[in-house]
Every structure is written in structure tokens, then in C-alpha cells.
Length: 350
Ligand SMILES: [Zn+2]
Ligand SMILES: [Zn+2]
Image 1 (tube, rainbow, N blue to C red):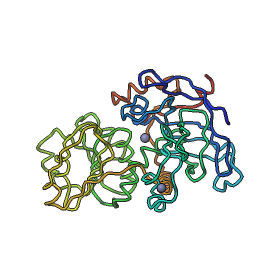
Image 2 (cartoon, rainbow, N blue to C red; image 1 turned 180 degrees about the vertical axis):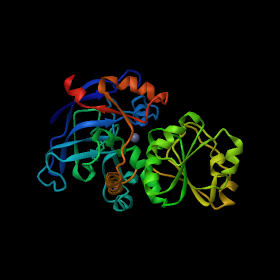
Image 3 (cartoon, rainbow, N blue to C red; image 1 turned 60 degrees about the horizontal axis):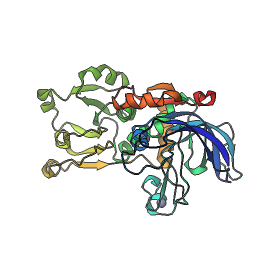
């Protein structure tokens, strides 16, 4: 086994703390990555604190992982030692079911191995994530990172980037389409950048007028305060797409009515309680309400290449790992622009 160190949640209550563990020996198809940076996703907090009820401890969170290849197995062809590499939300899947065969591993019907708080394909060995110094991952689930991008700022693309890129591509956003982005956090700020690069006309909808300048700096063409009823009235039937990144409770019907005929509202934020949707708000204008979960490996690579081409990275605050617990508290107050990324050099010095 390969000795590894990181930060782990030992239970749902206590702060994350230093943790020694082991990574598997390098198999023929495995890549060993020296982790340089790992983004902090809001789902790390949900899982570290067992808010989804499925947590396994000790837990090393982190699924926005970037670094350099340190060693490769004998059958690895895609990577060589020294290459930049990334690992996202999952590290294996069955490879046989219809979803896997269509490059949609995240929807694997048999078993998908989440990058942490999950089980490997043997359904016994726990997976440990990116708040650590290194990771061993089967080659197929390792992404190539464009070399022109700032590596620390690439990390959030592995979850926040693909979560927004995938549905925009799948549901057909194109140049000239009008899209509204709901919520300007980790996901929302990536949606603005990606939709802008696709050539869409981007409007940020927000309850806080103070976000207008930031929205425009990120690439939004318009900003609308949703509390201004008169101006909202004028936007009824206006948008081809809405991407909804909000995970706090909110009224879907209010936003669905902003869509044109055949418009699509995409959910990527999940409020804890079910919401009511009026059938007629969909029926009368043949609108669609859809959801989407991250993206498959092939599309994640496509997204990274797209970001390389368009110079898209996340806006981040780089922190040493010793500040991870404080960062969690700030995320809960939406006090970050727009993603925390852990500099793993700090772990090595610990
Ligand atoms: Zn995530
Ligand atoms: Zn499968």
C-alpha cells in the first residue's frame, strides 16, 4: 500500500483534522497523482456532516482534484510521469450498463464509485478524496488538464464546471440564445462564464442588487434584481433557458414563467424540501423542467478542453488546508468568491 496523508472528518460533529491512511498499490491501469490543489464543494460539507444520511467515517472529502502524475501502471497509455491530471466526482463505474456505454458513467445503473464517501467496485473498500497529498485512480477516470490554465483555478472545473457545462450542452444552448442564471455562487459563476463563451446572452437573476458589478465582471450581459416586480413582469416569456443553481427553497413557478415557449429550466441546485410546480406553467407553453448531475468522463474532458480554448477558470480563494474548517463556515454564509481551493503544499509542511 502507498502511505497517504490528508484531512478527514472522523464523525459528523467534529472539525476536520489531520489523518494518515493508505492508497492502493499501483495496478497496471492506475495513475498515481501528486495532488497540488483541491476545490471545496458545498457537497463536501453536506457529507462531512452527514446531512444526506449516508456518510462513512473517517471521510477524506474533495472531488475537485488537480495535480501532476507521479507514477503510472504498466498498461497506462494516456498519461506519462509529469503530466497534469485531474480527478472529479467519481473514480470508477461498471463500464457495462447502458449509461456507461453511452459515456454517462455518473448515471451508472450498477455502481458508481464516488471519489470520496463511496466504495470502490468491490463495494467494500472506501474511497478517499482530494484533501490529501496523493491519489491512485484508474486511467479511464483521470482527466487531462490544458497547460495554459492556472492549475489552482482549474480545480473547481472538475465539479462546478462540468455540472453547469453538461446540461448547457445536452439541452442545446447555442450562440444568441437568452439564458438566465439563478444564483451566483460556485456553480452560478461557472454557468455565467461558460454560457458567455458559448455565445449566449446571459442575464443573472438575483435578490441582491450588490451582485450586479460582479455578475457583469464574470461575463453577464444583463443583471436583474428579482425583487423588482415591475421589471420582472417585462421578462415573462423572455428566456430560452434558465439554469437554476440555488439550493435554498424557492418558487419554481415564478421562474418557469420567464421562459419562452419550448424554453428549458435546468435544475442543478437541490433544495432539501420538495417544491410544488403548477402543471399549466409547463403545459401551456410546452416548457421543460429538467435536472442534471455532473457529466461523464468524455464530456468532462470536452469541458476542460473548451475551458482551455476559451481561457475559462474559476474565481477562487486559495487557502492552506489548516483553514478548511473556517472555510466551511464561510461557505455556509455564502462568503466566498466563488470557490475555496486548498493549496496542498500546506499539508506537506504540516
Ligand atoms: Zn461537487
Ligand atoms: Zn454502469
